[in-house]
Image 1 (cartoon, rainbow, N blue to C red):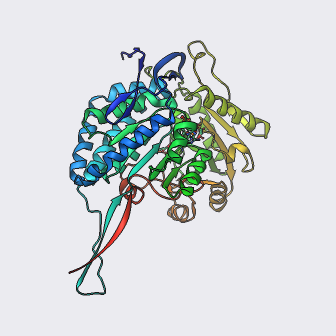
Image 2 (image 1 turned 90 degrees about the vertical axis):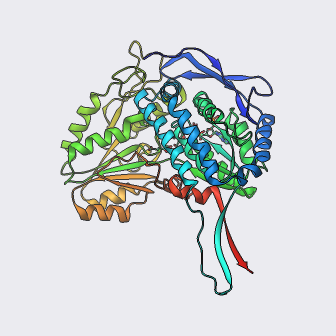
Image 3 (image 1 turned 45 degrees about the vertical axis):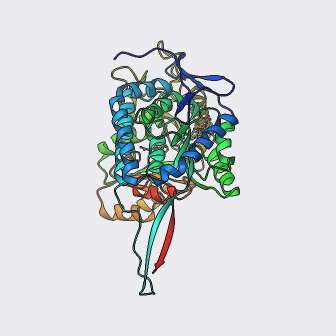
Amino acid sequence: MTVNTEIKTYMNYINGKWQSSSTNEVQASINPAQKNEIVGYTPKSTKEDLDDAVTSAKNAQAAWRKLSAPARGKYLYKVANVLESRIEEVAETMTREMGKTFQEAKGETARGVAILRYYAGEGMRKTGDVIPSTDNEAFMFTSRTPLGVVGVITPWNFPVAIPIWKMAPALIYGNTVVLKPATETAVTAAKVIECFHKAGLPTGVINMVTGSGGVIGQGIIDHPDINGITFTGSDNVGKQVGQGALARGAKYQLEMGGKNPVIVAKDADLDLAVDATISGGLRSTGQKCTATSRVIVDSTVYDEFKEKLVAKVKEIKVGDGLEEGIWMGPCSSENQLNTVLSYIEKGKNEGAELLVGGNRITAEGLDKGCFVEPTVFDGVTTDMTIAQEEIFGPVLALMKVDNMEQAIDLANDVEFGLSASIFTSNIQNMLDFVDDMEAGLVRINAESAGVELQAPFGGMKKSSSLSREQGQAAIEFFTNIKTVFVKG
Ligand SMILES: NC(=O)C1=CN([C@@H]2O[C@H](COP(=O)(O)OP(=O)(O)OC[C@H]3O[C@@H](n4cnc5c(N)ncnc54)[C@H](OP(=O)(O)O)[C@@H]3O)[C@@H](O)[C@H]2O)C=CC1
Ligand SMILES: O=C(O)CCC(=O)C(=O)O
């Protein structure tokens, strides 16, 4: 494929115009597969830039809310068409900016298109109920009203899908938006916003301000004119968002980490389980909140499963995600790579046995990138750090159990509860797992990652603020219910 190597400076999008930051300062976005390559520059914005964006969103609010939902939907269909016409280009930028393979990046961009179309269609669906009143002369019903201005703070691991699955429902239900994308993937975000611009959304309905989390993200948390904040990212920052929003009475929604288990029962199809563990744990270099990280295997099939898993992990081709035949790209940044390596060190120091991987890759051609070997640990116990904390890297921890009850207890023995999967052919195992697993997504004979846009998405315990994103569930966050009582 041809790679676009032009280094461009992208801008904030405020009040329907592309604008540099008030200080004109920019930050470089670096390719994690080739750290000497700059993908583009984006503004290092200030509080003043954010204020302008919020004012613009606030001014646009009334007219956008007054449009019919089907009319708002028509705009989203147009955005979807523009993005669809740019899939390859946006995907290439994503791969160069955060490292996931081009195939995965294309899949994610296509998913962005599908999400836009889904929420465009939502504009034609009902948003309320008629409820019988005890007064037989009255008419009672519910309707939905938008929050107002929504602040959207997004991470780098799904730089197209996550902003879109937050912005599209915000818009269809009548909110206006200020997006603060992750700094690491701000160029990809700018390209997504270009699609909204091209689709001709009314001025001010959508705005983007790039810049540091500490300034622009914190600014969104504190801004009195932002009525709701939707966030995906780390546990620590999520807590700050929740506490800040609560303190000033803004609505908030948080999606944070996972420590997702896969259980392999003695009656599992082992080949299927091995493939799903690798796909769920190591695709996107393990940088998904739904990634498999703990592999809990029945002792009867433990050795056979381990042997098959290790053999396949050794075959994984790591490299620049733009190259043909590469299965796993780099970590998204040097920081992320160092975090992963530090967890691998902790695993070794705390007594886990390294079966494969464990090192930074420094082979020629990969030495300028943030590459780490896909890694599998054996003999992991639940008290170890690698069994408890989110690593966000290509690291699998094998854990042995003697029966299904032990497996589910172990699977639940973490602070997170996002996704979990089981491989079994026994119906009782499936039913027990569905009933007892403390996770927002429970998947049977399927990998832990893989979210469908039309279904609710979110976790239990520390994984989320207990609300759900995506599908029709999104309406609960992006609107308030009004109960209407009418009497002639
Ligand atoms: N649940 C998930 O899908 C994700 C989980 N993570 C977890 O988080 C770890 C760290 O990743 P990282 O990128 O640092 O995640 P962060 O939580 O720091 O970043 C997520 C978003 O929050 C912004 N942000 C950072 N600080 C603040 C702040 N004080 N107030 C408001 N917003 C802020 C970031 O901006 P900026 O980019 O400018 O810093 C980014 O837009 C990963 O290793 C992983 O464990 C990370 C990404 C996604
Ligand atoms: O598994 C997926 O497709 C979604 C994962 C996700 O939401 C995340 O990593 O933030």
